[in-house]
Image 1 (cartoon, rainbow, N blue to C red):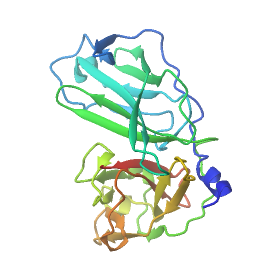
Image 2 (cartoon, rainbow, N blue to C red):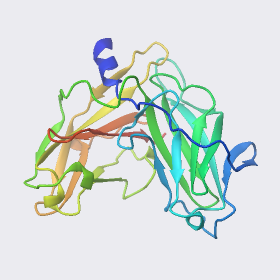
Image 3 (cartoon, rainbow, N blue to C red):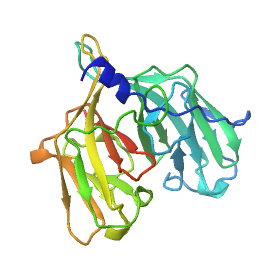
Amino acid sequence: MNRKQFCGLATFLLTGGINAGCSAGLGGDDETPAISNAGAAGVTDLSRMTLQLAHPQSAFINVNTGFLLQWASPADAPRTVRARLYRFRERRGGEERTDEEQEIRIVANSDVSWTVFARALLAQGGVYFVDLYTDTDRVRRAYIVGGGRAEPLSQERGRGVEIQTGGSGSLRNLTLDWSGGDRNPVGIARSNRFVLSFPTETDAPPNFWVRLRRYKERRGTDEPSADEQDIEIRHDAGTGVWVVERRNNFLLDRGAVYILEVGGADEPRQRNYVFLTEG
């Protein structure tokens, strides 16, 4: 992939950060910022939390994106949720793999909504993951900093797979699972399979496509790239489930970044999901 093609790929981006309120409940645990929710009950898990961006279907963010945490009510949220933000750099180009913690600030929008921001602008092309945790639960999500709007410049696909379903739904009905339903796309197994689920086969769009990219940030002596991977898809007729994996059970790279892309000719916007593998 040449520089022009890579820059074209990288132009998926949010149109701006989230405008939040000016007050926040901040706590501390070894200097780790935390959300303090005085109205919470005895909840310690994060299953009721939603973590969103301005454009939730995009894994590509801008340099000042905020990460929006929300609950349906104060009682649905834990009393304390600690937050960290890391920049992930993989081992390549003569450089070692690192997870560099970033300084953050937390802004309270309401008693059920907070936004996490990096104190400094994020690096173009960089890979970041937000880490949210309580004493018993953890949610981590990964993103890539791009440029332009959150729309692909080109629909060209190489080794992606076209799927004809016979359905009459749309990608709005799509649920993505991986590693048996784990909520954390950071640290997935190298043998991972991506599961695209619809309530029924007819809830899927009539046709859609899937592709998997191996994303590499510029690192040391190595140039950036985002090469498509050879994939295969398994589907049992009559079900709303399609399983995506690398062809011939080929393992994902260790300590690597992948982008799963799902789109369709009649869909207004493709979905992009970032995954970091174990190691």
